[in-house]
Structure formats: C-alpha cells, structure tokens
Image 1: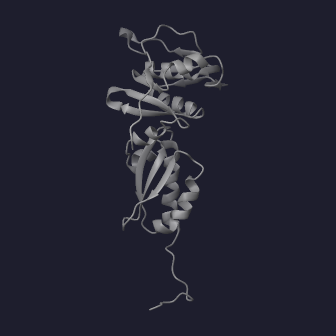
Image 2: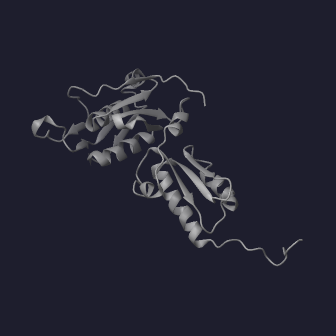
Image 3: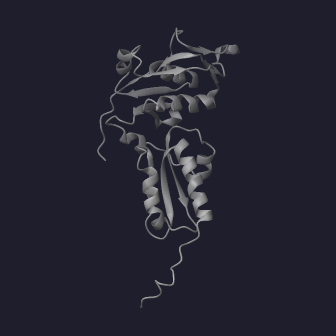
Length: 230
C-alpha cells in the first residue's frame, strides 16, 4: 500500500490552566500529576478531550488533518460530547473512556510509536483511515479478552476445533458487513483459523461468540441421500 502524507500537528500538552469542564484532582507532592481526572457534567469539545488525555497520560497526540481543523470548529458542537453524569477516571479508565467517547464521533486512537508515547487520532471516514488497520498491534486471545473496553484497532487469531472455517465463511461475512472496523478473515490451508481485526471492544465479544459456536455446533455429517459417489 502506497504511503500517504501525514497531515497532522502535534498537540501541545504543556498547557496552562484551562477554563473547561475538565478538572484534575489535587497535584501530588513533588509536582507529579494527580492519579485521577474528572469530567464534569456538560459539553466537552474533542480538542479539550484530546489535550487533557495527552496531558494526563504524559503522551503526545497528533490529529489527522491538523490541530487547526478543530480550533476552527471549537464551539460549533460538531465535535462535542455532552455528559449528563460526572465521571472520575484513573489512567486505565482514561485510556478506555476517552477513546470510547470520541469513537462516537468517528475518531480512533492509533499508535505511531507507543513506546515513546506518540499517537494519532484518525477519523474512520477520512482518506487516511487505512492507517487505523496498518498500525494495529497483534494481541493474543487472552489479551483481547482482558481488554473488553478497548476502543483501539487490534488484531488477533482464533483456531477452531470442531467447526469448519470454510463453512462459517457466510456467517463471518454477515457478522462483519455493517461494521467498518470489524474484519473476519479465514486463513487458507489446513489451519482452520480466523484472523480477527477490529476495535478491542468489538473483537472480544466476537472471539467469545466464535468460541461458543465451536463448542456447541457439531461437525456437519452427510445425510443418507448424499452417500458416497465413487
């Protein structure tokens, strides 16, 4: 796949105090960040959510299309989330909840260099949406099932024992056809395996469903009318 230019701008995370519906809990001794942040009731602009998530986690977040894209839309309501209940988040829940909220607006967090804390937000409808899949990490099945609220694209695999992947192909196609970010790909040869790609929150229940089908669906046996045709 031919690479496309990355049009993005680094979000400045060393910010002065912001007048927003975000608040931090008290700073710990020595000036280290607090261990929780609070989302108050009210409207939250995407720009504020991304900035505060990056600041709280000590990361750098790029935004596909450049930061000015959101600065122009600030206050328009186009990229805004309204909360009706106060939410208090630690680091783990911040990584789950903020991407979950922004996915409702079509945005997915992708790793550029996760070890260095560098990420990029890409919209599922934008021209660079292919990078959402291209940057996906591979997780084993247990990791997927341990992160059922993860709204980042991941890839895993599943080998079936009883049910033929070939016979399941129409079912797999039907399960994924209406989800832009759910890929169910039978593996060729005799492996009887499936590669599953999608947001972790979607992949985990799909793994459970396929495991259940494999446990409870007996292998198909030819009926008497088919017989052996030598």
